[in-house]
Length: 135
Figure 1: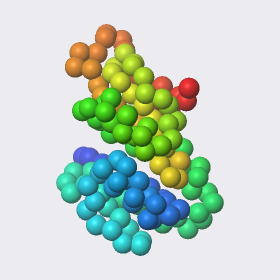
Figure 2 (figure 1 turned 30 degrees about the horizontal axis):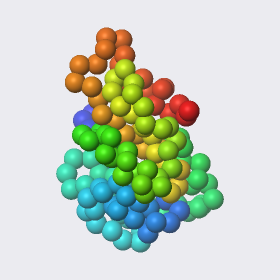
Figure 3 (figure 1 turned 135 degrees about the vertical axis):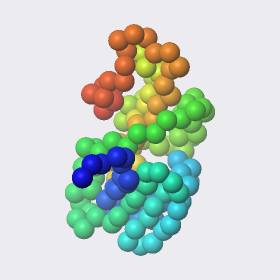
Figure 4 (figure 1 turned 120 degrees about the vertical axis):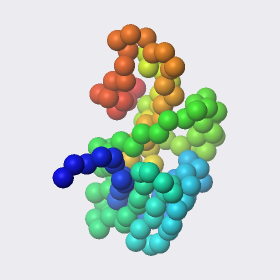
């Protein structure tokens, strides 16, 4: 058996409606289907799915999960998120590989947002350990 691509990222959430609102209305991710027990975003390729957590108290420790997105208009995206009072785990900044920020969803799951440079500086590749470094 070989794995060829990631099919889904599944996040356990404490409040389905609040999380759906965050991903749909704040991040503008296309909603595929929604129910009380399972919600999917995107129509093709990898799916972002939400599922209710059995132990709602433990969900707030979701900072061990990092979901990554790229943004073609990084600066405008950051302004929109700041206007919507989204919590920033790592404030937007210029990195060797491009522009980068990390936000939190309602359960504390970390969401990395990046706009990679067309020609990054040699030796300034994407540092995965640096992704989760708070300021």
